[in-house]
Image: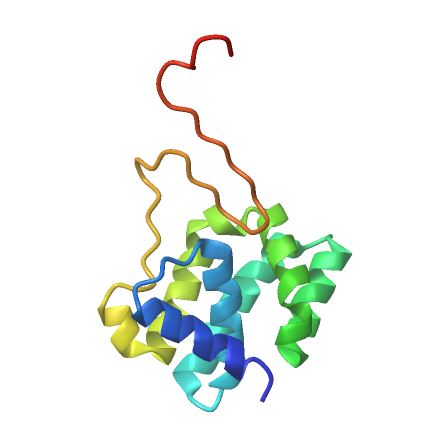
Length: 146
């Protein structure tokens, strides 16, 4: 089943305590939901997450295509979907992040109980959300001659 590998990897990383940014959480939750749609509650949570994302993607054909195609082939469409989610502001949409967390709670109850799907950026400094970012932080007084 497509998406099982990426969803499984997300669950393993989160159990190990690896911090996952919101876009990866959302994409991973979608992949996990596809892999686990045999359970009614999971299917409902998957459809709720997909519906919230669809609302953000309304009128953006490339984003809508990435979401639709991701359901059939998550590994091929992960990157285009990540880009679309980043550009749409999904990572900062509390309803989308909450829906992704709920889906992961249903798919991975142990990880959820351990707080692995909690995303909180309040008070954070120098934070980047998304992939392929580059950041340079300079603290203190610059060296003489710079």
